[in-house]
Image 1 (cartoon, rainbow, N blue to C red):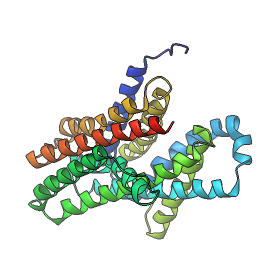
Image 2: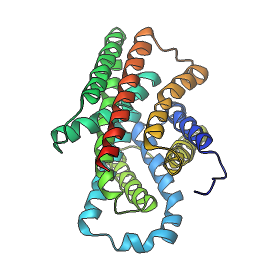
Image 3: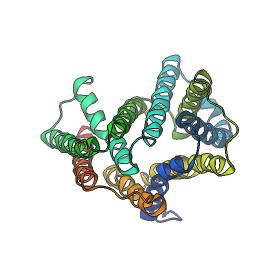
Image 4: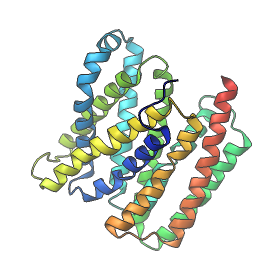
Length: 296
């Protein structure tokens, strides 16, 4: 294997830092959640489309009808993921929101068990149980802060469920499509859905401050393109399990950045509950990788 110009571990670190900024940029964007999500996906799609047309035009043109429908479904789930998660940041803390939305591997495991009839192992169940316990601890603390906090937590969990559905569809399509072809189709579908939702709810795309428009661009460039591209690039040189576990650095990074930039100090309930959830995701992610290697 040719040695990359950038060390894989450094590339992965860049990815974790990049995605950790997502919740910060969202908080600094003074616009409705649906508008933020629509701008994020639209700008990212516009940036990626020229490369997709240049490199993947033939592949996109030869797609079968059922694969196109699956890509559209994946895009809808991705759009719903961003709509619910970004909205959650209006109601709950960055720490709670990012930790809860990071539970999507657990929902992938549950869906695989109940829908795909793939039996879950004891470590996977243990990871799910730990994460549920952690969620209860955070919820207990947020109850004292009012119903708004709990609603924000629930929206973040809905975002995790939508992400799990998106990933389950992606597993099937990515076996047939290149990464660039797949994400351009999915991103444009998500962007179109969010634009329609904005128009249907009377949201305006103009009239925001220059800082807010800057946050739109930064969301598309930093967490969406740099962050997620870094993870996919690192998979060429590092194991999937190591990359998956490293992504758990996002809630930690986002919490630290929220403290430094927004002045949000996590409560003891959020700290303990978040730690339990992250350990649960870690156990589940490791077990998922072991199972995947056994199948291969």
